[in-house]
Length: 388
Image (cartoon, rainbow, N blue to C red; front, top):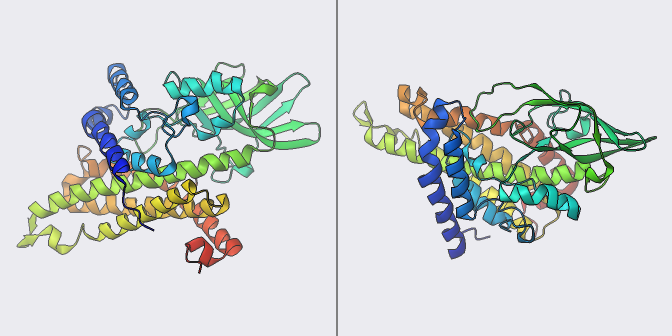
């Protein structure tokens, strides 16, 4: 396959790069000094710039006011956003793709304001004993004859501090029937409490708090999709998120290679350039392979490939790209020496921030399990795309 970019994709890449270089990258230092948080003035300025760029909610169909990007166009976008430190990419918002499965009333109340940037939501999946495997969740929403009563504790609810509502994965219990479902839960509902707000290794514009739901009333009409589709829809969200992560890791590699190469070409040790010792150049092959895998997954989705095949390939892309980006950051810090260990250098920030990409939306170990099961069920040739 030829994964060279079309003129339209090249124009899109330039548009995203302009937003990254001119608007977002200049606030990296502010974000670093304030542990990821930005001032209200900076937030407002960036918010307007993102709206003006036409890149907000690009993963949502045009019929709902989104950009209507296919997955390849989304990858082009996230690859450039991955050049940013302090996770500033999150400021170019992408509402959860599962929201398009809502009823007309849900779309009007929840999705469309998300698309406009009028509010944010948070996806609540992880629990103490249910990390990368959502099927181990214990949270339950029990029908009492009038509404559901949702109870459970969710960890790492990204954007939970600023969200106005949650998408909560829980078991919908009616009599003897217990089915997985997604529930739209307003943050101000009774029984919703932020029970922890831990700090993490990386900086982030928002927080990843813990929330506890105690018999929180949820009307039947707030089920997203339908009962029984909770894991299926969450898997749909996971695939998009994993490919976005892979693309951002590729973008991070690009910037790290540029930083490391520039430093190594002008820095001499023992009578020769650091670059001539190949300290940076080894990362080029990893970056190229990660990009190829990521774009291949996007092409498969855009071509309407078997979702199960896409699931396995997305795991490959996320696994390889996140591991490659981490190695690239480590090498770049090493090339910079002591300066690379200073927080004023982007390489140091990437070293902290890229570590989580091997954990969230499914750890590297989970991705390997997905790949192994795919090889077993669908065969090596089909999974690797080498069928005759």
